[in-house]
Image (tube, rainbow, N blue to C red; front, top):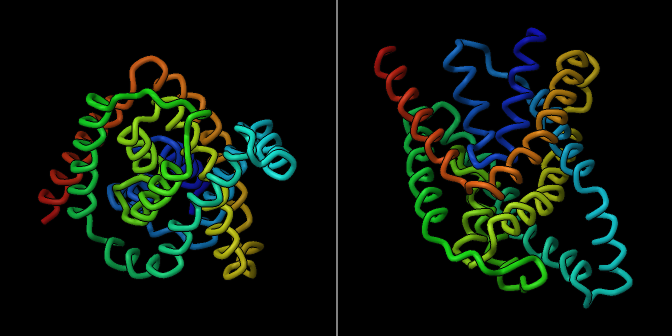
Length: 264
């Protein structure tokens, strides 16, 4: 893998992990579009650990307060948020443990299927953004909100769905304010990224040294771009919502269809 490819894929992961556009779909589609070889599992670990660093650095004060309050004052707003994150993490972690390999094998080279999922979820994202009644702030969230958002996160295994997209969309459907849905989605991303990254790293730790250059490049790029993507999305949400990402999904799905049929 060249340094350019490592930087490019790292940027895709950094953007796709936090913007509602699906990082997994992008990491499958763009190497196919450019005719690149499939990247290794070690490189995939680097990308995920990079985005984990991004969210931890961006929200370090929030995480610190959430953990401290969760232990010392569990009935406070920050204290409750710790347990909301724990509850929301369980369905995605369980579903990933049971079905990740199966889903990955089904979708790995099904480019048209990924395009269809991108477009369909784009429609959902557009509709929910336009019609959701955003009234509930972070202080008004309850365990039901957290549970349902956590269950929705399980569907992020399917390339094209987007973990951030499905959790934010579910939050909006439940009445959360757009900024609240986005922030809770980011906060709950750390445990699931950490779990997936740790498991993959343990399985592939012996290959890190031999691929250190691409590993370090992908890690650094996804961390920096992921940090910027979080800030970018929060600003976009404050001003205009999620429609722009629905349009992007439609454009990308169209490109996939055109390229697929031209190559037949």
